Length: 429
Image (cartoon, rainbow, N blue to C red):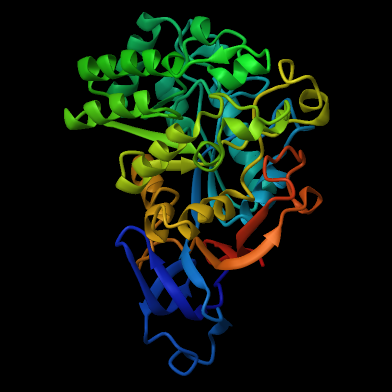
């Protein structure tokens, strides 16, 4: 079926990869960007073209979120592809990479095929499954990396599980290297982290909670960097949350190792003080750190030391969150609020708009080797139109996710997504 051409005019075109913002418009034909620039106006496009006036709003590539939990299969009560993709589209996210922490885990080609078919039938945005590094996410036996990649897995991770056995990790990274596959590891020393729910320090002690020191993350990350130095395979640290980890990443990159890292929007915009009086919606893994650590993460994102910004979307229902802090599950939803929360940093002058969007568009696309995430002729028309200044107060009942465990409940935010397109089709308006 031939799609009618669409012209988006009167926009501020944001090119994160090129670090530019220019006035102009954009023409879409057959799902790809056919032309863009100041010459794309209502007067210059043909009569067969549908014209959308952006009214001076920003127009950028759609966001790519590299860490999203979707409950299918096995936890549909928490999230489905339909609800997750609706939330993603409302937040300007056009591509999501799902973690394999499902039931059954994504450790066989059959499950990958199920996810791709299910997403094709019910999702509004692009869904790319990440497969398990080890069978059953148990950290013992390596999954069939080659077959999983062939079936459609874009990367390999044990999701919210950290691989304790160094020999298993070494073998997994070796096999992944042979297939030129990306390993995305969540770094945490289980024994050092224990059952702690907060950042180790005075606040955790005052509240009588077990603390998770930054070293629990850094020790495993440092081990992984030594393995990368030995094996030379592609490696992505899924989440970093401390200055100690940033130092490890900086040393690895200085050596020229094929290493990248990500940070969650929660750790960039919140700190341990937000936990307040045992507020479980602020319980994460890794836990929120102190303000100095948060500032270091923001600076690292601004300079490019941190490559990717993710929502770390992890829906939890009332039965797992409305509990005493120590018993509550980790995680929060974030697909719909990642842009607005990130714009807090832009409005505060901590980071430029292009740098923020680059960590959610062109950089993840580069790491995952995707054609999306770019504002250039020939690129897929995965686009987001947004007003960076429009204020609103977040009402959780307005969110599209099936679960409502947002840390930004009743928060004053700025930045509204007004239009989201995937392959030239409007999926949110």
